[in-house]
Length: 359
Image (cartoon, rainbow, N blue to C red; front, side, top):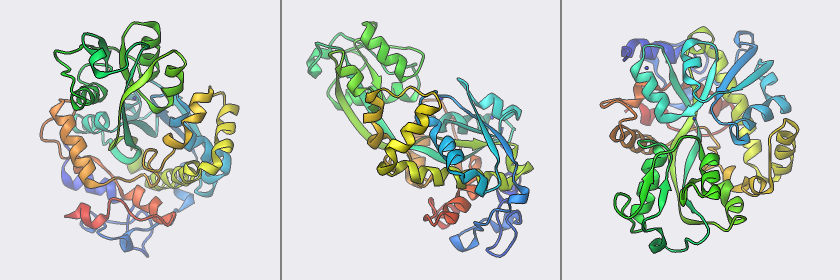
């Protein structure tokens, strides 16, 4: 779980890591924004890569750590010139990213783009981490039908948040008026805390995640409504590293996306979970049971990319929710060159296509 910069400065930052196919990776100019895969150089100059990195994530759940830990364990970071990556878990990683104490941050896409738009710090969104969105209403024992929800206390998290928006949509889609049929309340914390609120009887239902099904059913509850959609809900962002060591951004994404290819292969489930258990992560059976769903390439985005239409819709929704400032053009606050270089290095299609983004 930042003021507008001129287009020329934004493009200059983006293109420090891009050049023609034969150029050195750092070459490029604002006039040379890549418009095809042929113009993207996948080769990492490891002599220019920062050896020791610090990254920040906002969620202690293993899903938000395993790309890095698998990349370290498999030697993928070493292949691109990175010796070590330290992970710190904080409630909001953006202040550390803006201040320069971390090199990369994994956080909500909307909050990151909003921060980039409100500051003059140079924060740029790089790549999608979770591109699937599970919209689930979990309920306590005794609630079995939509009619049973009438008058009950429900939470999607904090009012005005993405989860609050989604739970209102889910209720509406199933014939429940979120303003009159139920008592919607605002709560802090993440989905694990919302699950505990249901179990404790503090609320009757809440927005949950796929991994919570068995835990809730063991307490007599159930998933009453569930929708799975596409939305670039969170991802990696960077700041100073993009100008201080642009090769490092491409190297970092190359290694972590390679790890993601390994993780998304369900045949590697035991190897991944055993590694995470050895690192001290709690992995009860329900979390293990959710592996295939949570590691699906459509959810834990296999290529790190996104469809432009999905990002357009997501950003517009978050502008309506007043999370992203009105009039924000997300194109101004992304740097996709490191992602394209990583995708090309791993023989993945470039997504979004540079030609489409240039239109």
